[in-house]
Image 1 (cartoon, rainbow, N blue to C red):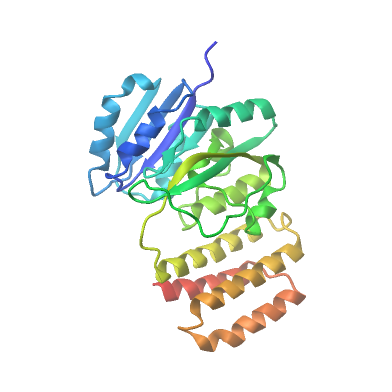
Image 2: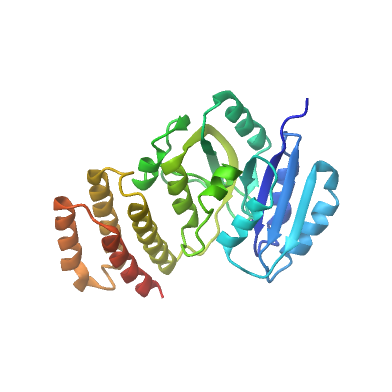
Length: 307
């Protein structure tokens, strides 16, 4: 009896130097029944040509291949289109510069079968890190990891910043992902927003094994860090507005205070006169639960600085 078809979705963009290694890691999967959907997002380099040439030579590896190029529409819209074009019940989403370890798909599908968890919508694992040359990168600190196995309270852990989900390890239940609307093209942190919305409605689970490699690129500038923090404020604003009872009020107050201090660390040298506003927000957040407008106010300041 054949195992069920599993999909690999690769929303590709401007990774001509990495896409062949990415695809080779997919071909090396020990899981036999795979389909591959790769949509190039109008890359200005040779990403599409390199990918098509490689896959033309490896078509026998897959039950089905879709390789297409479209006009640029952004990572969220392209990822949504990739997943929608898949036909497997489970879709393993993979960035076009990242790498899978050979047992990644097989191990996650085995865990899904063993757990038999109703409503399971996302499974993730652990990852190591490589640089642009594929060499290992050591992390100075360990990122927070959730417990092994399925969780029904994961949205709290994600919201509180205690739940790191490494994107190249993710497998999504396709119908559940599409039912919540997929990734939000209006948000810069489309992944965290999506994981929050999925975990507010469904169980998600972790396989405690290193099953993929996340590629780190140079250029982590201060402006980019400020922009990412702004995106977090907007993401949290959206979530507390849409799911007002999913997170305890004390947790919201604690998380907001932590992020306000992160805000201050990012801008204190450039805008020291904002300290009174920061202290006032900290004090108020001990007395009342911040709302979406409080998150958006700090996000808007950071976005203006980043631009």
